[in-house]
Image 1 (tube, helix red, strand yellow):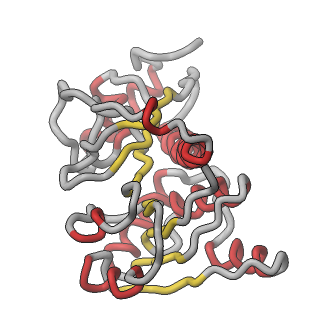
Image 2 (image 1 turned 180 degrees about the vertical axis):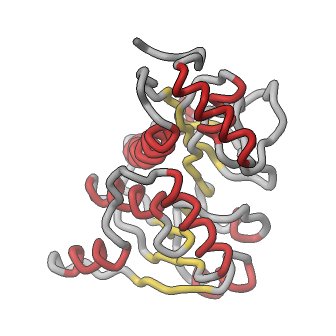
Image 3 (image 1 turned 90 degrees about the vertical axis):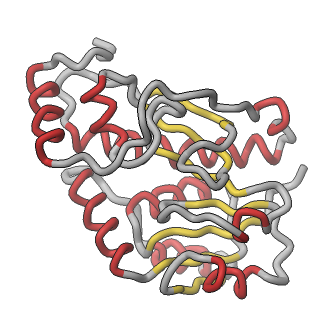
Length: 245
């Protein structure tokens, strides 16, 4: 198969989406259109993630990456909407012959958007699925002694419940901090999305796609301060259950 034609959705300048786009471009996967949500939620989520990965490098801004593509005579439509919902997004997709939609760090999106591309909507989640669905996966993974990693999956109307394509653990070493774990899962999520599109190009999705199964844990919400205190203490004391050294 050829490289997929895809739209790329992210919260405006989210570090998660910036890293993923960098990874995709590195293998020649160029979106037909980028649709960023410019909203209060986008601002809050961007700042939240910047705090979570504090002290680690951040991929170039989307505009910077697109200017680099322009030097190679590659132009990508880049637009903003107030919210990633069907009413705002679908007018920009209608008429595009899309194989896929790729989520690069978005709010929960449901409805018509998920049904539009021929071969589905895929997302990379900074946690191992199905064990760690929802928000703040590295924190809850440490808190509950779940292995840490990232997963690439199809999107359905649930929260991180669609069929899996890839999942991989992060090698957690003694001395790593919470910010390091958030950064490692962020980078791995981008790598797995790149590898998923490489597998698409090679026609391997049918043999890779599989149901997640049930999770032994509920869908997690953002970790409150009291949970983060326990997480940081476990990492300081090196009592997390899944170190590789």
